[in-house]
Length: 340
Image (tube, rainbow, N blue to C red; front, side, top):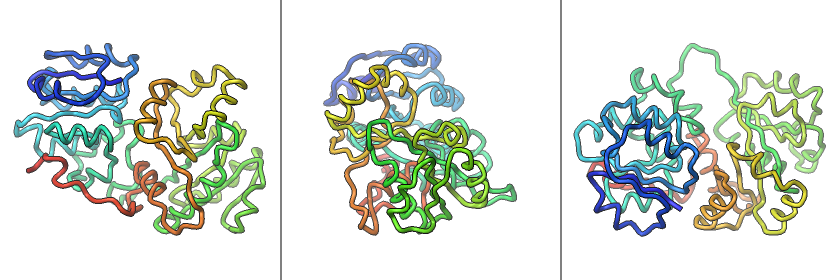
């Protein structure tokens, strides 16, 4: 179910063809919005920017981006020069706010096709002012978009861990490495298993929990290290971020719940990947509502013989690897009416 917070554009938002669980109308302090919805489960929030008191002060939007999951919020902008300026929009992007538009058509498009950084990168001004708040935007802050500096490069360590049985972390890590190595310097490591040997790739490394730290240190000059964690707590502690893989078939989910009926609570707040998934966008929203989990990305069954896999490039693009160019995608026309 969805939430609508409206003010000046109430009439427009009332015409949206979406299910609404809660609707507020008026002008609200940003702290009141946060306290009302920080622990309130919703699929999408449509937020009329004029419903936020003093919304032209970017600090209010910053507070919102820190407290709420901005992936689930679609911001309806007004026609003011301030909130439509490149400077204002760049500050939103730096805080991880990518889903904004000025019309109902844009809202419905973003409802079904949320933006990643790549979709808004062309209006992001990468200067010293717009980057000051870049560490406040949550999970989707990009790794490789800032200009080169004299600071030493820090390798990004990304872990993958199966939650449902045989959810495919090993094959996924292998396929992600193949995609990334075309544009980045990447290593892949599996821990406490020897499954990489079946891929016949000398750059896939197998190790154990005792040696994982030493193995990672050998690749400290790389752009990214992908880690198939398996059950290694040592590997988990070394990762910058971890994705938890669920294969969302009925039999796999039911089996998981029989083994651990508290697992959904344990996964709350973690980054969930649906892998080998045949769920549609609507199915994913239903899954989120029923499980009370936020799905980071929905990956369909893949063919590891393909040279370019659009779903993986789109996933990597969402992580901030903007050199990955998803095939078959077209740039949105004038960002859904923002500058038309």
